[in-house]
Image 1: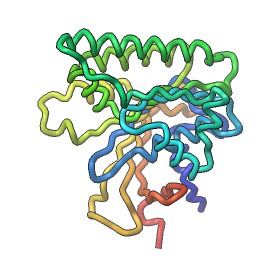
Image 2 (image 1 turned 120 degrees about the horizontal axis):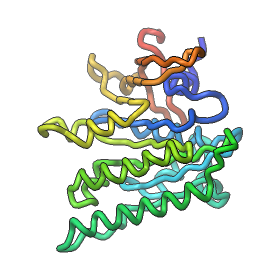
Image 3 (image 1 turned 90 degrees about the vertical axis):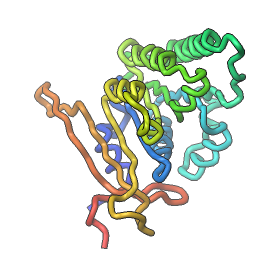
Length: 259
């Protein structure tokens, strides 16, 4: 039985051998104990693979370009080359200046400006008639976007809704990473619930229910809300498997499949 991570994870995500499914919204949720960043790295590599002409627009709040370049090189993907070839567009938000006294207006303004830049990049690169040319918009930490927006979840939601419209207008995909556990003590985590509602695919990275293990780093639950069965009807599908993050890959496997 083939346990290659790309096959298991891609199958769960509903990806085919050539490109991402058109116009999908993917939400990755993780926690302090179990990071879901490796899914983001996998999707970057997948979107920029040699048998596609995909383009990635990456909005970084958590880590600089050098961090992702180092990780993706280990996975066999050179982000410097992809950037020079206009396939990887990196928006570094780590140096974003803190909002001033008029913080609410300022946070809204930079989010509007950021969306404008993303839309311009999508318009310049999206080719709806070419099924291979998929634009994927990614952001690595929605919670830090909320911090940068002076705590305004409404402004962040507006921004994500605007990005969501691009998936139907241009056929691009939207991938976001957020930390589920920061909302556990809050009443009515509107931002998280709204993001889960928008998502076509929800991925949860969690620690093992049985506790720590040396050969397993955690478990993934993938809820794919729309799986076409070939007869123009859709159904929900849930995948559960374990994973182990290695130096230059991630191994995914079903529980009980390893001896």
